[in-house]
Amino acid sequence: MDATASAEVDLNALPWGNVWGQDAAVAALQAAASDPNSMTHAWLITGPPGSGRSTLAYAFAAALIAEPGDTHAMRQVLAGAHPDLAALRTEGVIISIKDARALVERSYFSPSLGRYRVIVMEDADRMAERTSNVLLKALEEPPERTVWVLCAPSDADLLPTIRSRVRTVRLREPDVADVAQLITERSGIDYAVAEQSARHAQRHIGMAQRLATDDASRARRDETLRAVLRVRSVGDAVEVAGRIVQAATEDAKALTAERDEEERAALLRTLGIVEGQAVPPAVRSQVSALQDDQKRRGTRSLRDGIDRVLTDLESMYRDVLMIQFGNDGELINLEIEPDLRAIAAAWHPERTLVIVDRIAETRRNIEQNAAPLLALESMLVTVSNGRIP
Image: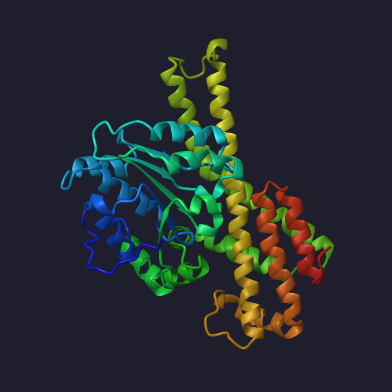
């Protein structure tokens, strides 16, 4: 059932202060949290990337767990530190059965301090079918005071058996101007930069924030799009694909290296090992397990980075299609509009559609563990000649 409501919502009050632009969804969840008779044991929050699914999920969890007015408990939940909150956000390519089973086990514990025990699964769309089946019984017969909150881009990303057991709250997609205004207020960024970043990020708040505050990210995006526009041969395709993967790899390393080192140092301190001292054989398995987790996180970060590039390319050829069909009032990539118009005039819309479909297929293939370099090379060959190799 779709949960919607219209009401005045105080978004400055805990725990809803960080939720932005989703008044109807907040009102529906506030009403559920305050009225046990209208509560549902399993919820699904859906919305496009950057719409605030996870932020809303934790705000809801805080409202469920803490007594009204207990701001200390609410802050604990929002920080992920409350004993009655169990959360899973995969940093791997998929959610493993092992992780799902561990979450299900936690769901059967009674709340220790709060009103409810809340289980938040941020990336429910990353469950394989076998993993989804692990959740079914827990969703069918949960303990009386346990609430599941799943997050996914769309309810279509989950199995019908899961969808039938949850109540769905759908988030709205913000306007470019709204995202730009938010970034300007948060960061003091010039509105023109914020608007460009919001447009390029396609209204993804987190990505728009990063683009607006990182000159290198904006420059790298512009360079990548212009490089793809210059692809004319198989050789060009191979060269540009290599550059994209190299840039994404360096970006992923930069994002994870500092965190990896901090985690390793913290583990060694916990084990009583002085910096520079050899790791004793008895605890090497723990260090190896951490390294394996970090490697999976690095792989996820790399694939997410490449997916962002492909999303940008989709937006570019989407603009070409808009021009070809005479509906060019809301182009995403205004900064390269002359190049896009030249392409639109040079080939038929059928070729553009082939390329858009090929980019979407490449995103799916990489998500399913295809080798990024080979997938990008194949996709860019299609860009060069308009035919699928």
